[in-house]
Length: 98
Image 1: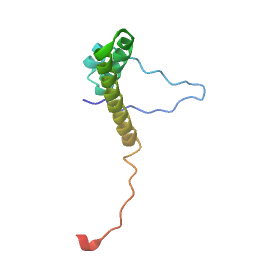
Image 2 (image 1 turned 90 degrees about the vertical axis):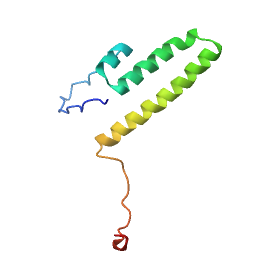
Image 3 (image 1 turned 60 degrees about the horizontal axis):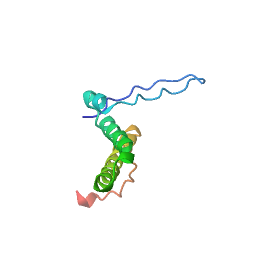
Image 4 (image 1 turned 180 degrees about the horizontal axis):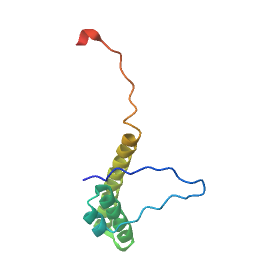
C-alpha cells in the first residue's frame, strides 16, 4: 500500500501551496495510504497521552517513538525516490571481477 505519485506543475509567483488534508484514522485506513495511517495513529496517541498514567503512558510513549521512526523512514525513502534514488558513489570498476 503506497501513495500514488504526485503530479507536478508550475505555480504562479503569488500562489501558496495547498495544505495537505489531515485525515482521521478511519479516513486514512479507507484511503489505504500507509504513511497517512501512521500519521493518524501518531496524532491519536499524542492526543490521548495527557489522560494516561503509569504503564499505559509508558506504552504509548514507546509506540509513539516506534511510529515516529517508521514515518521518518518512509518520508526519507519517498524523498530519495523523488530525487532519483539514493546518493551513492560508484565504486571502481574491476574487469577481473567479472
